[in-house]
Image 1 (cartoon, helix red, strand yellow):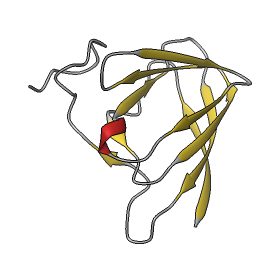
Image 2 (cartoon, one colour):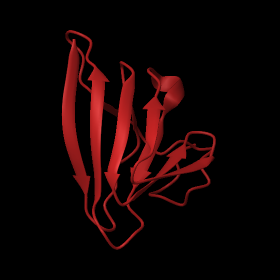
Image 3 (cartoon, one colour):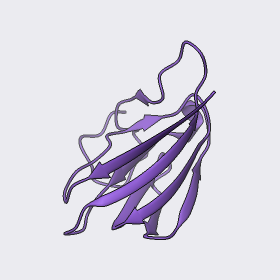
Image 4 (cartoon, helix red, strand yellow):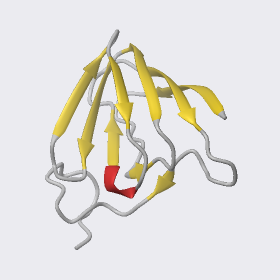
Amino acid sequence: MPVVRTITLGPGDSTGWHYHPGRVDVVVLAGELTRTLRDGRVEVSRAGDCLVEHAGPAHIHVGDNRGSVPVVLVARYEALPGHPLAVSVPVPGRSRSGAGHRVD
């Protein structure tokens, strides 16, 4: 069952490391979202960009607002009955983002 949410990250805010049990389609309405993926790759999405967050713990990531204006997102979650929209996880050991502490 799809769930649609508007998410705002203020300057300096972070989603924390997490993954989604179901696919998430995202549109960036304002600002610039910096996502760091489990393997350390960094992806930057700007206002007008669309992105997909694939399901499962193999797709751990963190979203940060490194800018000076709010990041506004519209996210469409493929919600799975009995599961949260997102699952928080520790910082992966292979992350090169510098966000938080490292867990090996």
